[in-house]
Amino acid sequence: MKVCHLIDHMGLGGAQTMVLDLLEGRGPTVEPSVISLRGGSLSETFDRLTDCGVSYRTLGLTKANPLGILQLRQALNETKVDLLHVHLDYSNIFGVATALSLGANRPIFPGFLMFIFTWRPLGSTNSFNVGLLSSR
Image (cartoon, rainbow, N blue to C red; front, side):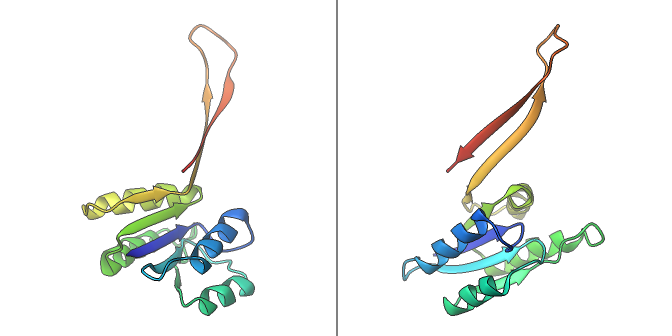
């Protein structure tokens, strides 16, 4: 099974540690890859990915280079992954949109979702920040 982990960046953080732990503990039938939307990887992260034989690619997405997102579509189309596992906010947004644009019937697995929005009840001047949290 080909699994692609899409993450905002592979810097220091809990989601990054979870991805590395999943990769190091994977079963023999899993062919993983990692794509990060932007740079900022730690050398230790790169070493751990290399040690467990996982391909790693960064798209270099920045405000100055928003077209890096097109590389994501191309990468997913070329690798024909069976499962896209997305991590963190931008990867959730861009990963789901890109996967749906390919038209293929492949599962998308959000690792962690958190949406925060402002809610104002009808007729009230008070507003509330509401967070929806879901770990899957």
